[in-house]
Image (tube, rainbow, N blue to C red; front, side, top):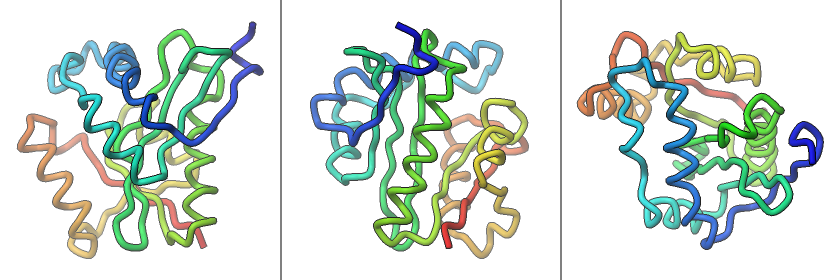
Length: 172
């Protein structure tokens, strides 16, 4: 079966949370040269289950295998993407972009005005990837205190401030 064409998306269900930490850890291997990222430090199954219950998380399947996921949480009129990962065996087949596009459709259809996230601005599969999908860097963080606070939390957790950014995709 070819992952390039034979994958499907659906809303995440509570039982999907069990597989998500392992996919996150495996996907973090792409960051092996990033000293600020600890691939062993992932969200817990309970954290993922909590986000899934909010109703805006998605999973991608290739056959019976969970190939990737996107977990998001509403914040007023915005939907924030906390994590999007694709298992290494299924990367580079459009699954990540498909998850983000589906989140954009879900957010628009449920009345959100924007999708937000934080990421590395300089890594090809981070900032530039999201820019190709309609996201732009938030440069006026004083006007977006929630995202400014999230970036500050990341720096407190050891992430490099000069390489992290908040991004937004307006849905109007």
